[in-house]
Amino acid sequence: MMKQLAAALILAAVSGTASAQDLMGNRSAEQIIAEFEKSSGVEIPEFEMPTLNIGDEAPAFKVSHWSKGTPFSEFEKGNVYLVDFWATWCGPCIAIMPHLTDLQKKHEANGLQIVGVSIWERQEGDEHASHVDAFVENNDERMGYAVATGMEQMEKEWMDAAKQGGIPTVMIVDREGKLGWIGYGSDPTLDSVLEDILAEEHDYDELHTARVKSMKEEHKQRHGPNHFRHFQQLAQTDKTEAGAFGQAMLKTMYADNPNAYNAVAWTIVENEGWSPEAISFAQKVATKACDLTDWENPMILDTLAWAQYRAGDAAAAVKTETKAIELLDPTDPSIADYEKALKTFKGG
Image (cartoon, rainbow, N blue to C red; front, side, top):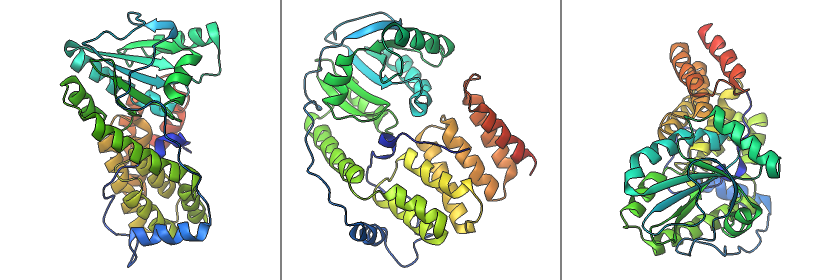
């Protein structure tokens, strides 16, 4: 089962360490990445600052239709609003819905209002609204918060102004109507940042600086040499070098990024022919990705199941894949692929 990851979701990088140097030999991760970047010859265009950032007043909130929840048109002082930009076709958006529901339940008494704003759908106008209504009806328990369909203004004045090119994007409006945070919904720091904003203990300058730094790194990754493409090419021609390069990426550029961990691990376990050390590494990072997503992302669980199977632990693979299937919506068209994998694992 091939996985197509939203590009923006594998570009959010934070600092940290991916794993021990199992695959890189005597070379450092920095050395491996530097050698590739030097050989690529790619020139990176100048970075442009967003016009909407953390600490700014939140733009006007204008939606065209409410599928669920109590409608509102402005942010009430004293409350905190988490605005989740999503789409019905976006797998990572769907994956974080149960977690957003948990956050709504946990913090509702403290003034939190979560609203999912649907954007970038193929349908427009009334068809857009009807399409989202149907999706919400089929996912009512998963989406335990308000849901609306966005207007063009939401895309331009929020997403475009903040230079957010991918979803799920989350923007948190604090009790004073200012943007307390802008980031991806899969970011593992979301919970702690939200709690700080609810407690009015967040630091605008620190979060603003951190976001600009992250955006500059993302800009470099987006417009510079394509590291993931190079990794995929190596996976077809030189699996030993691919393992080393994949590990180097996760250590230097995508540490603690569950989607990047999943992408590298899946490439390793998708096909046979990798070394036992590479399979072991894939299992480690897939497990870490599951930890970072609270074991609630079926796509990442599926990757871990395949890693366990490739490592010779079919029983663990069955258990993990079963959990992945339990988390899927019964109407999800990809469920057949998961069930096929489960049958493979049960066959030993």
